[in-house]
Image (cartoon, rainbow, N blue to C red):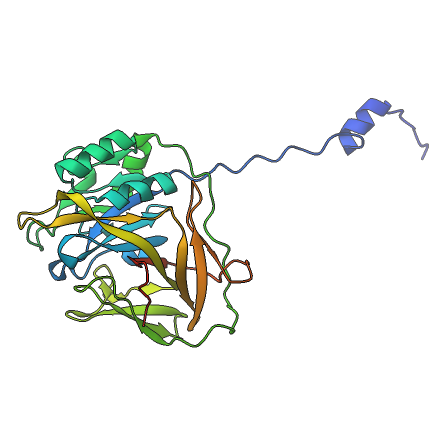
Length: 312
């Protein structure tokens, strides 16, 4: 058979083979949308709460009368119900600003609501959230206000808040064993709230127990809430000028910007650290040598306690 040679222009060959051309520009990964910050109550009548185990970060802090409240931060709307939703406090505003979050809450005192409005943070109350928050029939008022992943997603989209511009902590599944063993510890948040956390090797996390109602579980699955890491962060706590309830009790303020000592519990060990707070994102926890404190994958639970207070 007679061979026939066909001349192919160099330009065509170069284009076909990719020689000399620039590599394709990768499509940038879009930044995740703004997180949601949900105010969840912690009265005995509110337990068991729903959805806290699905959060990325939960803050707990004292409010009026020695009770505590949770600010649960979700980087992605969960598939579960979350609540009971209750009112905001002054520290809620600073947390929402640090995390660039969309605040979802039942309402607030006149004093706190004025500060919410002046802060400019995107926020939704029961009145403005429409059907994206709802009351359930198996709980009594006021412990029956909830949202869910679909509601969170809709409110985040409606708020039009900027996407996340920060990162959570680097994680380690095997923390160093240099810290003292701490299989169980009690956190004195206030005279009325002293939960106990116990390390569970099976889940490599900490389960919680309340002195009055016992094991702390998630109502969605009836399983214990597990925090991979618990941080006891010492902050300046002061009495706020406003009256928060009908008994005349004043609200509280927590300074989450000044920095100070903290304890990080992870992997069954305790690490003494210093915390500092950047303008955006979560606090930084540093070991005495300046390296980052170990933070395990999963839910991080941050207990805000008065300066000089340590987990025992």
